Length: 171
Image 1 (spheres, rainbow, N blue to C red):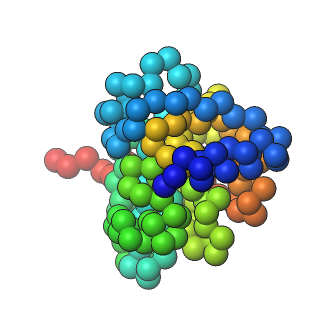
Image 2: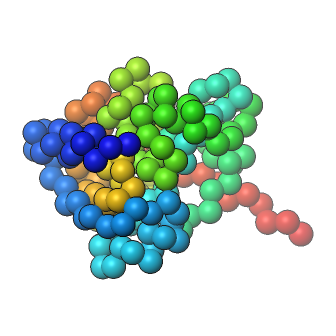
């Protein structure tokens, strides 16, 4: 994904009067790399999972980077059919126009056909700030929950909010 496309999304947010703050940094591909580079950027840093179910429906699940996600529990919570698995890099590129490592709720800007259902961990609703990539992994964009809601409304999307249950402990 190009920096120009990221600039386009950031300009779109500005044009819609959606206030965000964006930080530049070396490219990161994992949560661990992000933790090492982000410094004092406040707020919850997100983990974004591009998923598909057995009916070939696609989902983008956004949660706290520290959360453990149990796909079986999440599938039940969101009504996915036939379980959940990770979507392919090819589907990610085709549907959201991004590469692995740059997955973000802001990539829904590229989903003109609304083929990907946004699912946000309901626990993020209480966050003061949420941090994600603006579809390029050399930037982090920080936005309020209200700004995220405004972005989703501006692109004509409505997120499903879910709190996946923890699976029962073994033993």
